[in-house]
Image (cartoon, rainbow over all chains, first blue to last red):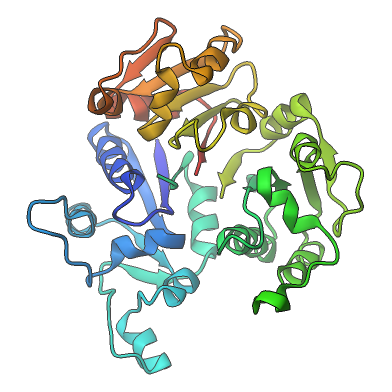
Length: 130
Length: 119
Length: 98
């Protein structure tokens, strides 16, 4: 089956880790992930600016490794990201900001990408809250 | 045929971005001409009350965006009657023509949609 | 269309009744995170869950029970992540109560 996975919670929320372990189990079970979509505070999971204490789980790093290993389509909602200061080089330049938090393979794009993924997948699974 | 998505909005307009970001999903879906429904549940019903003055707390008016829903083809609007009742709002005029639904009707509503996003 | 409902908030801060209101008789529940505290014996949320129609399957995520030192009552099926994925395929759609 084809899964679209959406994440609405920041890295420090347990649902963020749950989403990652779920996504890993989806692929391990022989299914496919057509897109990861990070919305609301979920955009922080794509941030390269987060420094996690050494003895704690580094979720942004784990998400990045997961996306790179499986060459996944990983989209961060641009409107949600701008509000939260999670910018890529292009947006940082456009708005005259110094901090670049998002680099490939993450891509900033619109909510249309969430709808497209949901339309094309067999299942949409959203993680958020706590 | 496109799948129909139900968006369940549970946040008051005064509690941060939840209400606005739920609405944005609905408007984006409408812009792509997808079949979208919206259910206002729990504190989400506060979004529907007329006469609110967001300028008093230096906030942008969510009501204007809510009014845009029909313009984006999002006409299937529902409100949980029990949520209204618990807040003393049952029978009060609402700013949008949302159909009030009781418990079993809510289950039927969920049943009719292919996709659900709750925010 | 059946729905698998994912619950992750504590039933003591996010009451179960609005979550259970749209529940269809063929729907399923998966408790994860602090929603697992609903399985505490003698608690009001467990009482509510036990009154659900027998056709509603209730599941709980194993790691969250372990972390909280909770045991699953008889009607609750415990799943791991592969089981979670399998559950998603068994219902027509998945709704996460955020």
